[in-house]
Image 1 (cartoon, rainbow, N blue to C red):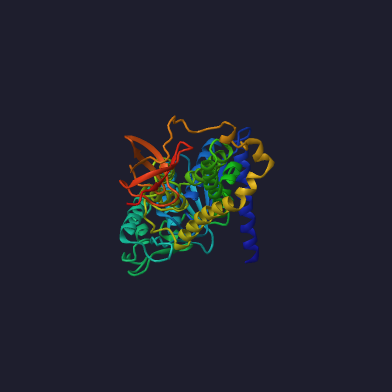
Image 2: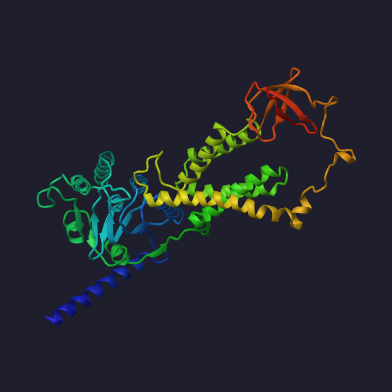
Length: 454
């Protein structure tokens, strides 16, 4: 018996050697087939979606003959999984998946989209019920969408659509396969038996040998350096620092207009904040637009509209909300698949950036103005009226003249005096529109007024 086993082993080795030799002779002087290997070994989310997109693009540029996906995931976002499925179904070259432990939920869907499925010992595929971040079943509209996607994907790759649907819907009963009340999950042997796995293998070499490709060149995909740098800016801590620079730069530029470098630093931080989230499918166009609308509303409140009211509050809400939402994989305010922990981290990151920016301004603002670098670019001379400087273009003094508040003064606004409208400010008190006022100082373009007590 032992000799027979040894003989079989020798025969198998000889067969592989002959096939390899024959392949080498037939392809002498030609390039070996190129096998492009990529990994799906993390949550299916916008980042993984972009990873697969870039990987398939690279496989095309490398003129790969085969694409092999090494799979080990518990799933993730259905929308991103559907994007990946579409890309795989439309890919022209053969795509194989090697499940090296788990292909659950969205991972099962992606596996079914591949031309061939291979599994290692002890692996599983299935359990595609859509769940929220808290681990509970999502509403039926998501389950219905997943069932439909699983059916159509199985049909596209020649697999039983009813079995694929049973991986989502526990109500489906298939005789000899699954009973009602249990979501279908296949082991390796079960998947082979029912056509959801070609064979049990140990590695890529065995996969290619079964495809009559005993000799080949492997190309393992790795993200480019630029993509790795982009990934750094997705870190919540780095995002908080960028928000700090954005807010601090904008505020400092408003306080000292014309300096230049604060607004430049804010713009650079703004690009470094939004671009990585946008490229990874997190920041949507409407979120970026909401941020800029918020900034415009705040600017209007500061420079155009007197006091601080609806425009300023709306601007703050839009700006802060855009910074938070751009970090989350929400679908137009649908947070079904956004975990409470993710929402908390995003909100705290944005809040820390804003509060840090304010603290930096209060603590470091004075020190900055005293530095030699700041003094080289700032105008420090006092344009005193005693030496001839004057900002008053009026030939007639307005001091003592009376009029009425043309707008609400909180404390800035406009007043009407002798039929003329002037920019005005109070000493800090609030004056309603229409109340009588008296000019107490007119040395600048903005006159200072007080309420006339009746």
